[in-house]
Structures are given as structure tokens and as C-alpha cells.
Image (cartoon, rainbow, N blue to C red; front, side, top):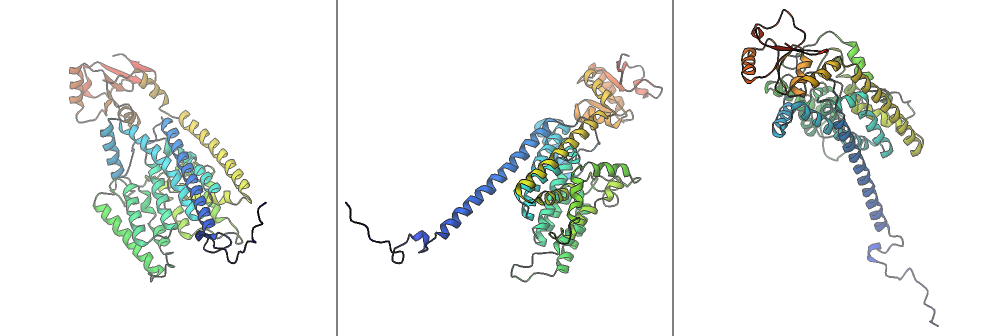
Length: 449
């Protein structure tokens, strides 16, 4: 038998250096908890990015066939980037626009989720909120069309993130400057950025300017940037008159267009008003700049401006995260988020089907794709048909009043190309087509000369 060991004396025992003489290994435990929290955050971040990448692929595979407008990208810098990528890859500009829209749609999901996390929302609220807002009918329309809508979502979310983080005046102005260059919605948000800049940071132990001084610095800096961008050509054809070049002037107020955009948010419309419906006993409402962020660009919906309402997506996500997190438990919040997401998806699928079914050019598009040949010269006075012919199918097409129409017709004749006139024969045919064998393309088919 072995002799019994002596009693363990905790007072005189030499503890492991890692425990620093403590009975409970606090340092090691804190280290393990910190590592576990970092792993959890990393796993959640990867999940959000994977969801964004998957939805970007889905959006890329389901491009909207209906033509909604003539401008692919409105701002000069994105438009130049679009042209460069089109030349680099040899793909049509619209196809590159579809790819860029899908990529930016995928990026908007982790950026919105990251912004909501920075505000203080938990994982089971921020991911469903980001998905509901971005998968709204309006968001899906922007993701599957060759426009800069999703670029506007990224810009507006980036600005909102900087304001929530109480960034310095210099950083806010830098973000705002890039936003103005990339998308027109940022111009309308200058008062919101100015007011938001007055709220911080003021607790860093250093002497900082007063709220009024921060707001004044931000406002004057933003105005200076707008002036420089305007005279430098950075805002040409990018802003409604009189801020831009004057090529886009306000028209008759269009209430139906405004209701279409707002209704296109689906469940996200509930999220827009949710932050301001809470009682006084609940958590404090969002800062006032969020309200300005919401209402300042609204006139563009009524005067026919270039904006589609991309600034509404991040604010809708904020309200939706608040709605979801009101659940009493994590399970309740998750159940509420999944229910809202399911309703949003049904709305989006229904409206996407309606957009395609009500396309006035659907019959013409099917006939044109079936009967036109790559070498045809097509003469059309319909702007949407011209867009489809040139941007989507890469055909040679022009209007009947084009100054070089006679040269184009002469080249087509010498090369043996077919000359196709979009529409039925009429007495207003261009004189240069007299004596030329011309095919006529209508919804009934391609008529022989």
C-alpha cells in the first residue's frame, strides 16, 4: 500500500503562472470566452456573406427582360466603369450592367447587416431584416435590372453606417463625396448628414468642437463638394434640375409613380414607420437625422427625378430589425422574422410575374428575337425597341432621322444586309429608303418587301 498523501494546502501551493495565484483562472476563462465570441462573430459574418453571394447568383440568373428605362447607369463614374468593363470583356453594356447590379445586390446584404449590428441589433434580427428589405419588390427589381439602384443602396447604407458610428467630420465628408460621385440620391441627404454629424463623437477625452461647429463644418464642406463636383462635370446628367446639367427637368407630379415605389417595398413599408410608433416606455426612437434621411429625397418620386428610392431600403431594414427584435425570446423573434420574410417573398414573386406579364413590348420582343438576324440594319423610332436592339441584342439600329442614315443604308446595300423597318409601312418613310427592298417588323411578324 502506498502511504496516504499529505493534505493539499491551497495557501502554500505554487499555482500555475497562467492563473496568477488565483483559485479561479479568470484570465484564461476570459481568453476562452473572447475566442469563442470571435469565432461566433466570424461564423455569423461568413453566413451573411454566403447568403449575399447566393442571392447575387440567383439575381444574375433571373434578369428582368422588360425594359424599364433608357439609362443603365446615370452617374459619370459608374457609367465610365461600365463602358470600360464592356470593352474589356467584349460583352454588351447591358449584360455587364446586369452583372454589376447583381454583384452590388449581393454586397448590400452584408453591408446592411453589418450596419444593423453596429447599431446594436442581434444576429437573429439583423439577417432577416436585411433580407426582407433587399428582397422587397423594389429591391429585387433593382437587383435584376441593369440600373444603378443597388449602387444607391450601398451608398445610402454606407452613409447611414457612418452617421450611426459618429464618425469624424472629415470621414463623413469623404464618404459623402464618394456617395455624390457614385449616385444622385446622396445629394438630397446633405441636411441629414449635417444634422447627424452634430451628434458626436464627444466622449473621447479630447477637446472636440461643439455640435453647432460640427454641423457647420459638415454642411459647408458638403456644399463645397457639390459645387466642385458640379463644375468639374461630376454631376452632369446625374441630378434633377436645377442641381444638375438641366437635362432632367421636373415634370408633372406623378402620384402613381410614387405609390408604385412605396408599394414596391412590400413589408418593408411597415419597417419605414415602425421606429416612430414605439411608446415612451420602450427603447428610444431613432435619431432625428433618420427621419430626414427618409423624407428628404421623397420629392424625387413626385417630380419624376432620376431616383428610384434606393435610400428607402436601409431605413426600412432598420425598422424591420426593430420589429423582429421586439419578440420576447430569440425563438419568437426568429419566428416573426421568418413569417415576415415569407410574406415579402410572396409579394415579390407576385409583382415580378406581373411586371413580366404586363410588358407592352413582350409580343414584339418575341417576334424580333425569332426573326431578326445579327447582320440586319434596323430602323426604329421607338426608344424602347432601340434599347433592346442595341443594348441587349447588339444589333445595328438607328432612328429614321439619324444624320448618317443614308451612309448606313448604302453600306448595308453594298454588304448585302437586310434593311428592316420597325413598324408597318407608311407614307412617312425616309426618302433614302425609296427604291430599297425593306422588310417591315410588326407584332404579326416580319413582312417581305
